[in-house]
Amino acid sequence: MKSSKRRIFIAAALLLVALCGALLGACVRQTSSEWVADLIEEYYYLPVTVTDADSLTPEELVQKYLDKYSLYYTAEEYIELVYSDAGNSVDYGMTFSYVDGKLVIPTCVGNSPAWNEGLRPGDVITGAIIDGEYVAIDGDDAYEKFYDASQNGGLTSLSTESGVTAQVKVTSAYKQSYVFFATNEAGWSFVFDGITSEKREEDAISLLPGGTAYLRLSEFNGDAALQFRLAVKKINELGCDSVILDLRMNGGGNADITAKIAGCFEKAAGKTLLTAKGKAVDAAYVCESASKEETLPASTNVYVLADCGTASASEALIGALISHEVIDFQDVFISKIDSSLASGSTKNGTTYGKGCMQSIIPNERTGEALRLTTALIYWPNGKCVNDAPLSTSDGCVNIDMPFFTNSSSEGLEQLLQILSERDDLVLAA
Image (cartoon, rainbow, N blue to C red; front, side, top):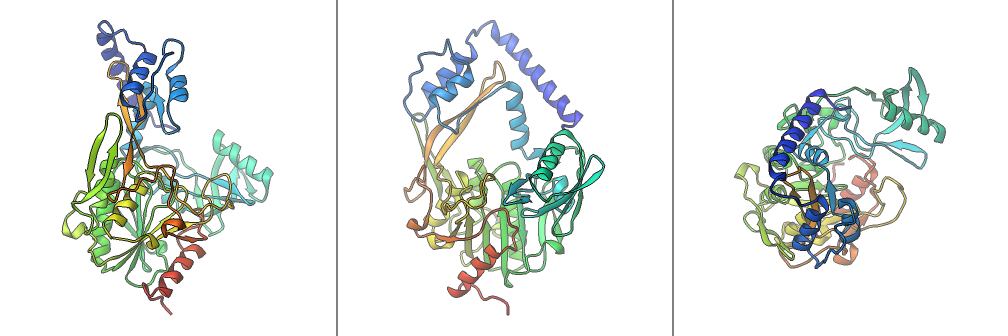
C-alpha cells in the first residue's frame, strides 16, 4: 500500500509536468511515438530506421525495434522509477517463491518492515494468519491461499521454520539498505536514514573464520555506494583480511555508483572501471577513489559469489576487479543452481551475461521517458560479457549454492571448504 505522502508527491510532480507540457506544447507538436522513434534512431546502439511511428504506440515501437532491456515509461511510471532509484520504498520489503513444496523468501530488503521483523533471505514460511485464522503452509492449496491473501490484504502475520513470527504491516516510506555485512560475531545492516548501521549479534554467520567478513550488495542504486564505503570502513576497523563479496541476484544499477564502489578496492582505485561504446556513446568510467579508511587494502583476499542473476553493473565490477588483479577468475564462485523464482533445480552455472548499458531519457514536455540500450560495456582488459556470461570456461568455480538459502547455508560451507583446501583460509576447529 502506498503512503498518502507519496501520492501527494507524485500528483504534484505530474501537475508540474502537465503545466510545463501545456507551455511547451504550443511550440512543439511532436507525438509521443514520434519522440520515441527519433530517440531510437539517434541513440540506440544498433542502426535502426523507424518507418511506422505514425501507426504504433510508444510501447509497440519499443517492442518492435529495441532489445529486452529497453522500456517506455509513462509520466507517472517515470516518477515512480526516480523515487525508487533514490533508495525509497513503501512496500513490505520481501518476495516469496513456492519451490519444491516450500514457501521460500528469496529476497528481503534491508531496513524494510520485513527485515526489521526478523525475516531474512532463505527463510522458509511454515504458516500464516489469513483472514484471522492460522493456515499451515503445507501444500499447493495453502500456498494459493497465502498468495491470494498477500494480494488482497488478508495476510496479517507469518511464521518461519527458524522460529520468527512477523507481522505484515501497512508501511510508510523507508530508505533501503543495499548492503549487509557480517563476521562470525555479528551482522550489520543500514537503518533509519539508510546510512546508520545497526549491529545484531543474531545476524552473525558462525561458519566464517576469524578475520573474514561476508559482504552482500543487492544493487547499485540509492545510497549503495555510501553504505558500501561505510561497511568497508567497519570491516577495516574489525581487522578483517578476507572478504566474501556476495553479488548473487544483483542485477546491476547505476554506473556512477558502481564506480564509487569499485574505488573501495585499493588495486582498482583511480583506474578504469569500464568503457561504453555505442552509436552515440564513447565514454570511460573510472573507479572513484575512496578515503584510506574506506578502502580495502591491496593485501585483502577477496572472493565473489555470483549466480545467473548477477548481471550488468555486477559483472562490470567483477571485470574491474579481475582486470586490476584484485581477484582472479578462480576467485569467482558461481552457483550451479538457477536462482530464478520459477525453479530451484535448473542447472546453470553462469552469470547473466549482460554487457550493455541503458540510458534513460525523459521528455521534458510530457514527463514520459524512454530507457534504451545505448552502448556495449567493455572491461578494462577488453572483454565484453554481453550474451557471453562468466562460467567455468573462464576459470570461474561452480558451487551448489542457490540464492534462496541464507548466508549460513551449506553452499557457503562448501565455498569455505574450497578456500581452506587452497590454504586461502583457515577454518575454525
